[in-house]
Length: 395
Image (cartoon, rainbow, N blue to C red; front, side, top):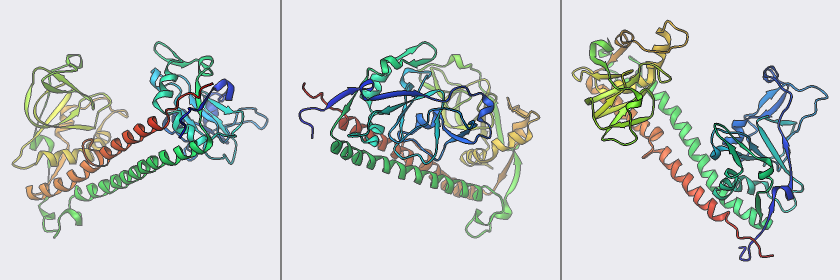
C-alpha cells in the first residue's frame, strides 16, 4: 500500500520529551489525592490502562507534568537492555490530571495531525523498534536509556489511512488475546470452585449419589506416605544432562545421574517455595538436599489425588502451623503431621479425573488455553512485524 516507501522522522523532529514526578518521598505515595501511572502499567500494556492507576499526594500549586491523549510513555532504567524503554501509548483522553512515575519519561508529538496514537502503541513494541531502542541503552548491572540517543531514533509516518488500516488489523489480534485471557480467568475461577467442592469431605458434590461421604477418613501424611530429601546442592545442576534435577522452585535443572525412580510430589524445604507444590514427578530424577520427596502408599492414596490436595491446602497449613510469622523452612515433623482426607480409591480416581482436566485447561503450556494464548501471541507478533516494516521514501 506504500510501494514508494514512507516518510521517517526522528523523535527530536516530531516532538519533545518530559519527565515524571519529581521531589516526592515515600510518604507522598500513601493516601494520595491524585493519580499517577506506575512503571508496571507502562511495561505491561501497549495502550495505557486507566483502571490500574495509583495515588500520590499533590499540593494545590504544585507543578508536575501530566499526560495527554497521544503521548507515548516509556520506562527508564532496567536490569536488562531488552526491557529498557518499554512503551505504553495514551489512546484515550484523560478525564482528570494524571501524573507519570519518576522512573519513566513521556514523549509528546508537536501535533497529532497525521498521527494515529493507536498505530504507535503497536509500532513501539515491534521487533525493529525494540532493536533500535536497545542500542540506546548503556550500563553494567542496570541499564539506562540515553535520551540524547533516543531522540535520534527515526520512526515511520505512513499515511493516516494506512495507520488506521494497520490498527484495525492488529487490534483484531489483540481482541482475540483479550477473549482468551477472559476465558482463562473464568476457567480458573471455575477450577478453584470445583476443587474446593471436590476436596472438602462430606460436601454434597463429592459424589454423584452422595453415598461415599461416610467413607472419608483422615490420616496424617506420615501415616500414608514416605517422606525424604535429596542430596544435591543447586550448584551441582547442569543446563544439559540425562535426568531432571528438582530444586526448591519452579526451575528444573539437569544431572547426568539420578537418585530416585518413582512417582513423587516435590515441595521445598526452605526458600521462596515454602508451602508450594510445583512438581509431580514420574520416573528417574535427582533432588536437592533441601527439597522433600513425598511418595504415597498406593494401598490408601493415589499420588495424583495427593498432588491435587496438597496444591489446594498445603500452603495454608504451613502458614497456620508455623511458629514464625514469616515461614523460612519446613521441618519433617510438620510434614508428617499434615492431615490428608482419604475417600475410597474409586472416589479419588473420579476427583483426579475432573481436576486433571481443569489443570490441563488452565495451566498446560502444551495444550489448553495457555497454549492457545502463546500461539495467538506469536501470530500477532508475526503480522505486526510484517505490517510495520516500511521502506524509506526516496528523497
